[in-house]
Length: 102
Image (cartoon, rainbow, N blue to C red; front, top):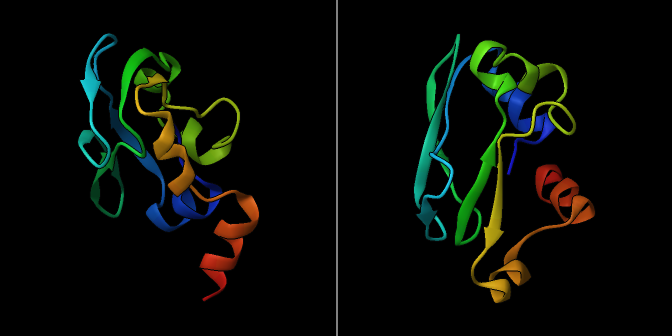
């Protein structure tokens, strides 16, 4: 679980990230954490139902990594998908780009 480049740009400079505890479970759409930027505080919502395997320890001291490397070093949560059928509702990169163009 992470943030797209477009979303991090809209959010602004990230200054704090609150992530779920490893081992915790969540349902699709549940609030699992929060991100604070210089502009606002935004909740993090689960894209799928899952169980947290690990969180990115780098973000505790360097939350701005989300801004500088959202697709690589700025990942937030690694989780086990509990309901694989929910993946059908996700967008791939092309669909996300088309969605942003609307």
